[in-house]
Each structure stands twice: as structure tokens, then as C-alpha cells.
Length: 239
Image 1 (cartoon, rainbow, N blue to C red):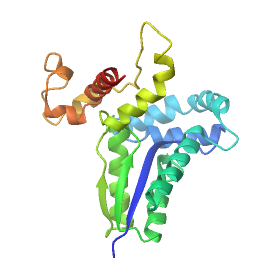
Image 2 (image 1 turned 90 degrees about the horizontal axis):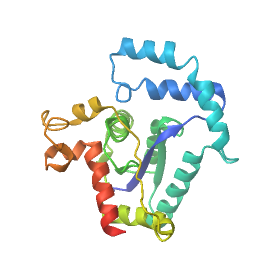
Image 3 (image 1 turned 90 degrees about the vertical axis):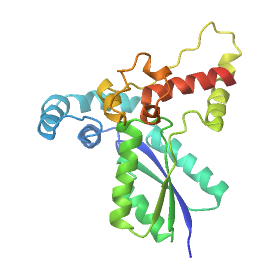
Image 4 (image 1 turned 135 degrees about the vertical axis):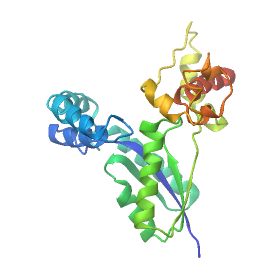
């Protein structure tokens, strides 16, 4: 008998704001070839000789400023989403982080122990990027294939322009929109241009075609920049 389950995956957080835990987190994060896509020897040298000697202490100071009594803000808020989704669906919902804890292997194991046979993966990244959405999806596929080979896996595609997502964005900004500001500035996390090129399945559209993000192409299915622009356009239309 089949049983449905859901797995939410977010980016991750150090286990604590200590320098040692921040260093472990940064090492795991930055050694991911989908984050730093240089050849392994170069990536290893850059991470271990250039970044890890100094960055963990600097980042730990920043984490201390936002750390909550209950833990990492990202994990605490993600746990609330998980609990509410499980309450509404009435089906097992797991939470995992791509880096550190709760880990993807532990979440898949818990869902398998609950008898889940059909798993819906929801990456908590509205836009496709190889350093977020793609790495999370591929890691879950690897873990499921190894730990629960009989489990069927379905992946929710990027939802950057889905009406409910846009509606939620507008709702989060409505108080500010009603104050009569002259401009509303959208700011997205940046990615290297080479990531855009590598994610282009056509190999000849992203950053090649003039005004590539405004020109229809299958490349937009995996283009972070094009999807961010579509989110903004949908927001403006709905607000």
C-alpha cells in the first residue's frame, strides 16, 4: 500500500554560531562543486587556504547577531513551515538542509521509517540555480537511490511565477506598498555568470542572444536571472 510524504529542503545553517561550527558549515557549503565550480584541486586550495582561515570568525560574529534562543533563524522558520504543512496535509512532512543539519539522509530515513513510499520533494527555492535548487534536488536523488531505492520521488519545479507564490509576496509587502513610496527595489542573491551559461540547455542563449532574458527560450526553464525578472513582473502586475 502506498503512502505519500513530503520533504522540504532549504539551504542550511551552522549547528551553532561558534567559529568551529561555522567553519564546518562553510567547508561543506563551499566544497560543493555546484557552488564553487572550479576543478577540485583549485576549489580545495581556495576554500582551505584562502577562505577558511579567516571567514569563519567573521561569519560567526554575524551569526551571533541574528541567532535566536531557539536556534538558527532559518531552521526555526523552516520548522514552523514544516509543522504547519504537515497539519494541513495530514501526511508526513520532513525537513532537511542541503548543508549540515537536519541532514537529507536523516530526513529520508525518518520518512522511510514512517512508511512513505511516494515522496514529493519541495526545494524551498522559488528560482532555479545550480548552487541552490539544482544541488538540493540532485543530493536528494542520490540519497533516495541509496537509502530508499523503492521510494518514488517527484520534484516540484521552480515556482517563481506561480500565482500563490506571487500572492504571498504581495501580501508580505502590502503594508509598505500602501505608504506611497516612489520606488520599490527588488534585490536577489547573485550567481556567477558562468553558472547561467552552464545551466543553459541550449548552450547558445544565455548571455549570447541580445536581451536574452526577454527573448523566449527553453533556456528560461533553468535560468536564474530570467526567472527573477519574471517574479518581479508578476509581482508588479498583481500588486
